Amino acid sequence: MSHLQNLLLDTLLGTKHVDSAALIKLQEKTLCVTSPGFSVMPSDVRTLLNGFAKNPLLTRREGLYFKEKDYKCVRADDYSLYAKNENTGVVVVKTNMYLVVATYTAGMYPSVCVEATEKLGEYLRKKGN
Image (tube, rainbow, N blue to C red):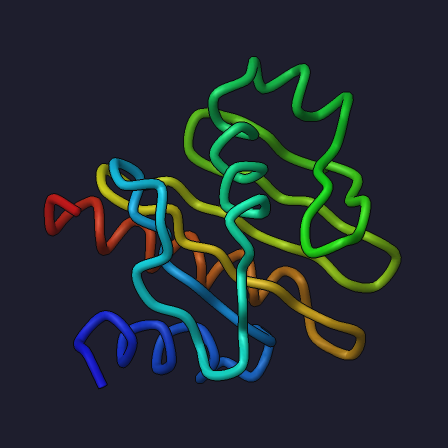
């Protein structure tokens, strides 16, 4: 396993409040690593990248269509996107080189997912990634 995949597993899935996670390379617009069993289609990668490319107000208004579900966007700014669909959600944090993507499901605390994802994003930014 790569260092980045270990980082995803330890810092995100290790909380037990992240169901799945991925790192997307911004420049190449491709998946870098994912948690086991988590597949992110190229159309989903584009959706997440476009969420940051648009005006945050527009992203909040329109929401996100990710992994064949419509999500209501509850936060959108230059570095973070939070979206939910009933009792599931997706948290995306932008760094210099990556999008950190984490999902949560029913029975998980969204706040723990958000905190862990934001902390990993902050760590990667400090490392220049």
